Image (cartoon, rainbow, N blue to C red; front, side, top):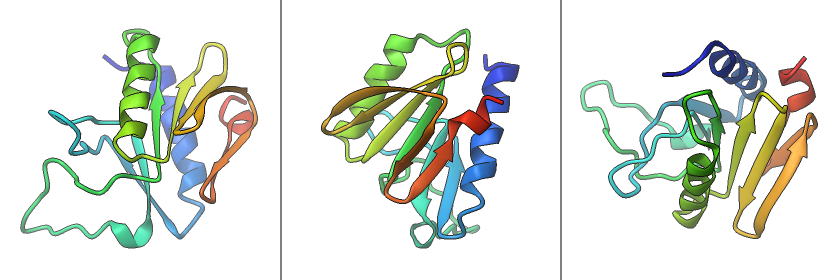
Amino acid sequence: MLSLNHSYVCVQILRQLLQNDSLQPMTELTLNIGKGLTPDICVYPKEKIRPNFFRDIGKFQEMPLLAIEIISPTRNIQELLEKASNLVDSGVKSVWTVEPYTRTVFVTTESGEELCREQELETDGIRVDFGDVFK
């Protein structure tokens, strides 16, 4: 079960991502990793997303540049950090795991993990100002 804070943070992040016309953020897109992994938000270059309204895709093959997870009360932080590592191991360049209660973001990349607080983050030209997200 997701929560009000989860939904709010998701929308605030999407607002910023949608300002960049070269990006296509996707919500709840299942990636073809194992039995399927579904981040809260996946961010792609716009040209990588070509929907076919006659034939849908259940598990998307192309890995995003960035995946974002928002922690909610019913989700375990350790499970989401393991999911972030799994996503990076599968070809996602960066995963941001957002923890609204402490206003922190766990950044997972191939080179390791980092903890950030209420600041602007950037990966591959994708920027989100978490100071604005948590206003």
